[in-house]
Length: 102
Image 1: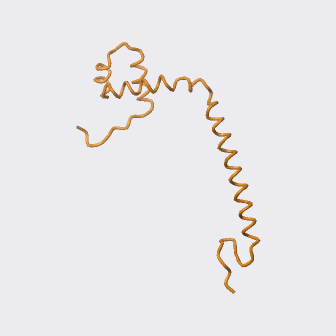
Image 2: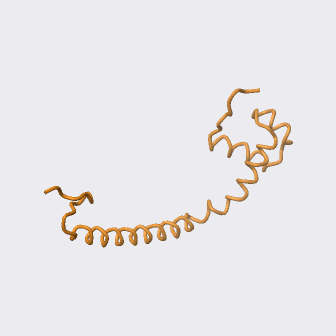
């Protein structure tokens, strides 16, 4: 048994998963050919099938998520600006929030 896990590239995983989808060879034959356990090939095949619609969605889901993240960050910036303005007006405090020594 190998002392460490082998990390396969995305290209390799896609190649093996596509070969499994083609069903021209059995899982055992593919496992022997690529040196990967049949269960792993099945997982990659399932992942490929599950994520295939995202390939043709042109990243719409990502854009929606991005817009929500930008809106949240703008909200946080506004909140921090108000807090910063409030704290900068307090007597005896410098910008680092420490009391000035006199």
